[in-house]
Length: 232
Ligand code: SF4
Image (cartoon, rainbow, N blue to C red; front, side):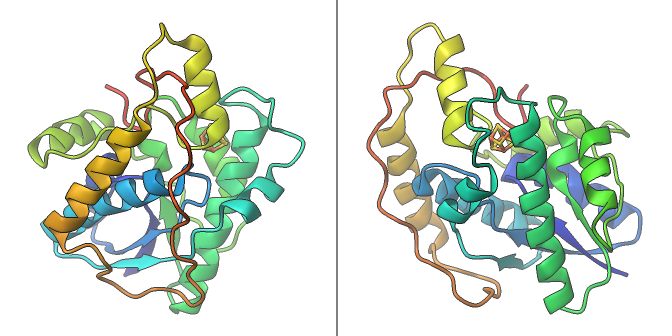
């Protein structure tokens, strides 16, 4: 049976796809993640997901990157810390997008790789998902999921992000950090290099109206810490 998998990033998707296949699902990968800032980081994570998709022989369905719309959805919650109310809204944004994509594709089930992370409470993600028709509560961190994502990230040589995704998580990682600068230029360089490795562009169907990535934002000077979705 088909299931649409919202993929937050390459590393978390590895274990999620693997588990879905083991359990007899036919996963269709979905990537939007308008929460990720800057656009170059969204693209870098997408290119790494493409590596994963190629490994499993799967296609990626994409949604438009619309960071402005995402910002509106979390308006008033910018000062919240990671794991707070802004993150609940963020989960809802991505899960509703996944649900819309699954409906458009005639797929009756969807779920998310977000539950792989040890730093995201699956119970909160499930609570959000329960309100959306078709959501399957699958805790991908269970059954050795997190450790598997780490192993596969290494074996596939995937990029490991250093912050959760939005500019606010970047800010918070800077506040916790010991002074290393956020490697915005490195992100762009890796993105470009991956783009030439992969032929960048787009495999897989795109949902209508995709807005091409905006130019990379100015470097923030923010620091980094090991706070990615698949932190090891
Ligand atoms: S910290 Fe992560 S989960 Fe929370 S709002 Fe930002 S991107 Fe979304």
